[in-house]
Length: 202
Image (cartoon, rainbow, N blue to C red; front, side, top):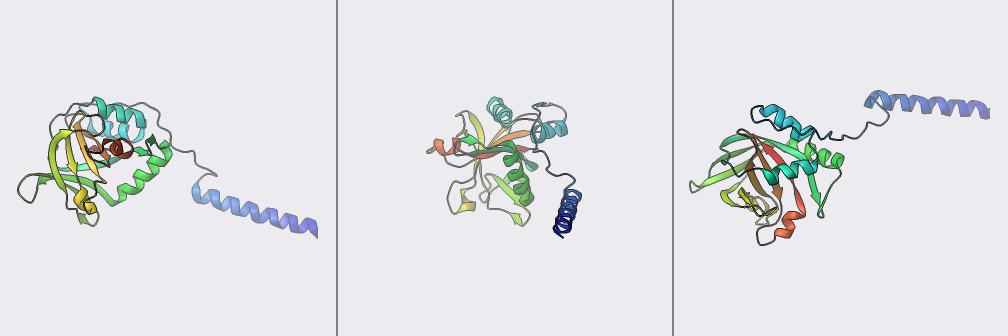
């Protein structure tokens, strides 16, 4: 009788495991790991975006932002790709966590519009699935990240005046911009270095 019960438990356990494997395709999928083949093409937009999203490491992405020239400011509606970079307490989060977070966040919006604001000034709007946000002025300033020139947009109006999201844009290729999205302001640069992510635009 004891053997029958053990056998039954074994069969039930095997069926449960088989069901889980069938549902997921594997017992435990390996976490995504970038291969570091970070190819930035001056002529192939799709290859550049694919590299940034799937092949470049977080540090390579930060290095690209740091070395990119200011370039021209983006114009019009531009596709937005959140990159697998996430600073938490001054440290880069593990790549699988950063990738999962940005993929989830990407479901809420997929583009930015660079146009004119309420008084006709240069302005940036975030396009969410539920509509356009209040936006922020596009200005030529300096990056809170490294102090070098960058096009900036402060979206504090979306967060009751708190500078939770400050974009910094630089032109990586003729059709792709690389951006940091940080917290903090120039008066509080430490916060900018200890929080935020990165984006590709274009």
